[in-house]
Amino acid sequence: MMAATKIPEVVLGSSSGQRTMPVLGFGTATDYLDPNALKTAVLEAIKLGYRHFDTASIYTSEQTLREAVAEAISLGLIASRDQVFITSKMWCNDAHPDLVIPALKKSLQNLRMEYLDLYLIHWRISGKPGKLVYPLTEEDLVPLDLKGVWAAMEESQRLAYSPLGGSGTSWGSSHVLESKVLQEIAEARVKTIAQVCIRWVYQTGTIVVVKSYNKERLKQNVQVFDWELSEEDLDKINQTPQHKTILREEYVSANGPYKSLEEFWDGELNSKFFKSLVLFIFFAFVVCGIVDCGVTTMCHSFFLFFISVSFFG
Ligand SMILES: NC(=O)c1ccc[n+]([C@@H]2O[C@H](COP(=O)([O-])OP(=O)(O)OC[C@H]3O[C@@H](n4cnc5c(N)ncnc54)[C@H](OP(=O)(O)O)[C@@H]3O)[C@@H](O)[C@H]2O)c1
Figure 1 (cartoon, rainbow, N blue to C red):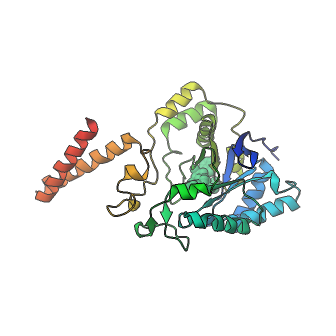
Figure 2: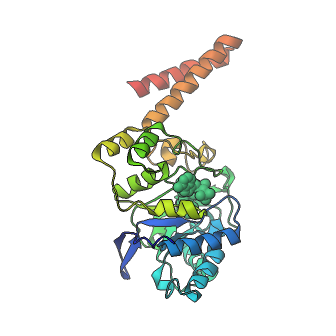
Figure 3: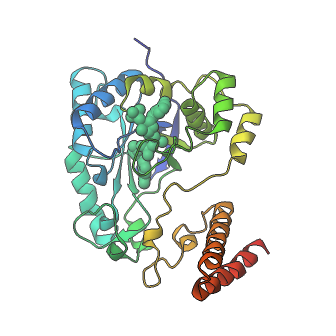
C-alpha cells in the first residue's frame, strides 16, 4: 500500500484565529452522485493522505461526506473531525443577507458537524429565494446584494477548481487533458498531464480542488509535491490561451442584472477569446449575408464589423 502523502498546507487567517488548509482538495461534484462510490473514494483518499474535502449544498454530497468521515473515524484512519478540512458553499438561491445563516445551518445539519473550515459563496450571482435550483435560468436571476451577503461571510483565500478542465463532466471539456503543450511537458517529466496541471496550480500558490473517485487517479493526483515544473515549463503553460469553459451566456440579457458577458465576468473574460468570438460571429454573418443576400443580415455584419474594428483599434 502506498504510504500517505503529507500534503503541504497554508495558513488561513480568520476572525476565529488561524487554520491550516491542505493545498490539494478532494472534489465531490459529479453529474450523477453515486453515494457508495463517493464514500469508498473518500475513504481511499483519506488513506492516501487527502485531508481537504470540497462539498456544496447543490452537489447533494454533504450527507455522504459526513458518513465517510464518520466511518474514517471509526476505522481509526483519522482521530476526529478536526483532522479534516471541510469546505461547503452557499447556493445562489440562498445568496441573500437573511438566508446566509439558515443555509449554513442546513449544511452543518447535513454534515452533522459543528463547524465548517470554509464557507463560500458558490457563484457570485443571486437567484430568487426559495428552492435551490440548478441550472439557474435567466428568469431565476435577481440582483446580488454582495455587500449584505459578504457581511455574513468569512473571507477565504484563492481556491481553484476544475484544474483538469472538468474532463468528462457535463460542465467541463477535454481541452486541458488533450493539450499538446501539457502533453510535451508531461512526457519530458515522466508525469501525467493531470499531474502537470495540479502541480502548475500549486506552483502559482493557489489551493486546488480536483475530483476523482478512482483509486489509481487519486494516487496519481497526490504525487505532485516531490518534483517541480521549471521556469520554462511555467512559461509555456502561461502562454497557452485560456478559456472559460462555461460562459453562462444564458444569464446575460437586456433586462436582467447582467447586460453583457464582460459585465457578468467582471472584467475576467479572456480578451483574446472574446475578440475571436466577435470575429467569428462577424465572418459568419458576412458569409450568411453573401449566401442569401439578406439585407438585415448584411446590416448585422456591418454592425459587427464596427464592433470588431473598435476591438482591434
Ligand atoms: N465553485 C464552483 O463553481 C465549482 C465548479 C466546478 C467544480 N468545483 C469543485 O472542484 C472539484 C473539481 O472540479 P471538476 O470536478 O469540475 O473537474 P476536474 O477535477 O478538473 O476533473 C475531474 C474529471 O477528471 C477526471 N480525472 C481526475 N484525475 C484524473 C487523472 N489523474 N487523469 C485523468 N483524468 C482524471 C475525473 O474522473 P474520475 O473520477 O473517473 O477519475 C473527472 O472526470 C469539483 O468536484 C468541485 O468540488 C467547484
